[in-house]
Structures are given as structure tokens and as C-alpha cells.
Amino acid sequence: MNAWVYILECADGSYYTGWTNNVEKRFQAHCAGRGAKYTRAHPPLKIVYVKGFEDKSAAMKHEAAIKRLTRAQKTALIAETAPVKMKKMTPNAAS
Image 1 (tube, rainbow, N blue to C red):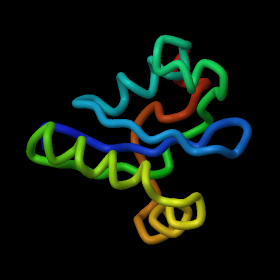
Image 2 (image 1 turned 120 degrees about the vertical axis):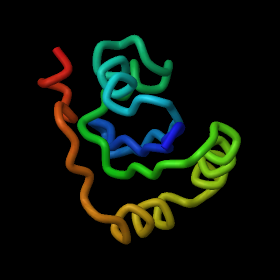
Image 3 (image 1 turned 30 degrees about the vertical axis):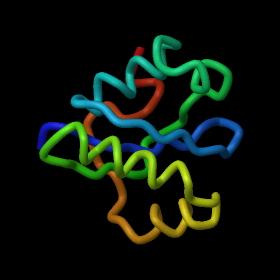
């Protein structure tokens, strides 16, 4: 996979959706305050959803589709997928 869409659960319970070519590195950037402006104000707790794509265009389309979902629909999407188990995927490990 060359591109990934991810959803972060933030400290206030909100979700942040993004895409990247390296999920672990991007999560560490979010945790260190070098990610999106949103995650600087709403620190991420964990990655709750990841899906891989062959190209950036497909990932960006999926990201846009997720961003149009309601919170309830995002929660259902997360519940339908297997739990994310990746090395160093908590804010403490990003330090």
C-alpha cells in the first residue's frame, strides 16, 4: 500500500481523519504538535481506523468521504473494522 487513511480519537472524544504515506510517522507528528492544526488543539489519544490504498488519489477520495460522514456513521465504520494494532501507536510512545 502506498497511501493510508486514518482516524484518530482525540482527548476530547472527537475524531480527526487524515491520509498519509506513513501512518506511524504521521501519528508521531500529530502527538508532537507538528501535525494538523486541529490535533494541536485536540491532542490525539490513539489511532482507531486505518485503511490502505494503492495510490494517493484513492486515499484522498476515501478521506473526503469519511469527512462527510456524521459522528455516528464514523463510529459505526470504526466498529466494523478490526482494532488497529501497530507498533508505537500511543502518544506516550511518540515521545
